[in-house]
Length: 276
Ligand SMILES: C[S@@+](CC[C@H](N)C(=O)[O-])C[C@H]1O[C@@H](n2cnc3c(N)ncnc32)[C@H](O)[C@@H]1O
Image 1 (tube, rainbow, N blue to C red):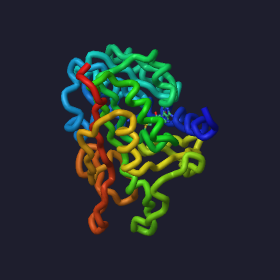
Image 2: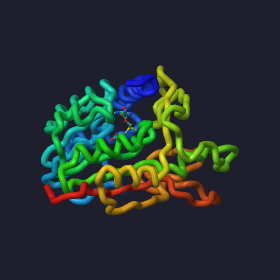
Image 3: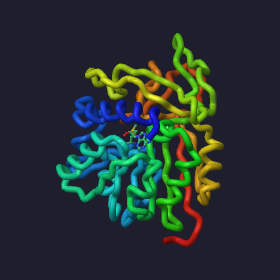
């Protein structure tokens, strides 16, 4: 693992420890522990029927969505994340929820080997995932390698156009390039995590890479996937800019008076071949 990913892992270990003991309500822990789902309305409406499916959740964080997929009827769920603290939290939540789930500690790029070259009906990736990854082509190959023929990817994440903007004096200003080179990531420093938790982060630095939609789609097509949908949305599940307005449960939109732009996007893609 290179130094950028090691720095990010320290940051995510800190966040995982805070999120696993969250008292802000952002992580819907009680709901999942009592058999419910932490999925937001958007992904719940787009993933389709998960009943009977073997699902792998990449960058599963503390595993709450992983367990939610099981509660929604998945045959099996496996969460993978490179943070040992996140994986330990996922295992503990599974035990407390009495839900069958497997949690594996590994980098996304090592997922195939870490999962024993097992294949799945669905790869699930949501909210705050691929901008932590330098190489989107390599990611797409990993996704395809984890799917059975006919299996699907559901990806929902922050929109690259949104990530390019920073809030400056109440306006959104174009601040970052549209395609981050592998070897020149953007460095950010944050004293606190995004949930509103007042406990500070110890490891404040993180490296990110913004990927244009065309790179993501073309990487998936090249990896042998076919595109079923590409949707753009005016909503996010966190307050990315000051002044964003909460328009639903954990659903935020740009404040009135700002020109609209897509804040998130979702992709449904299928691995070419017969249904497995
Ligand atoms: C914002 S969280 C994703 C949240 C997730 N959608 C959920 O269900 O809570 C991002 C996650 O990506 C993980 N991550 C970042 N880079 C990674 C990598 N290279 N390999 C594996 N996991 C990674 C972090 O540890 C963190 O748990």
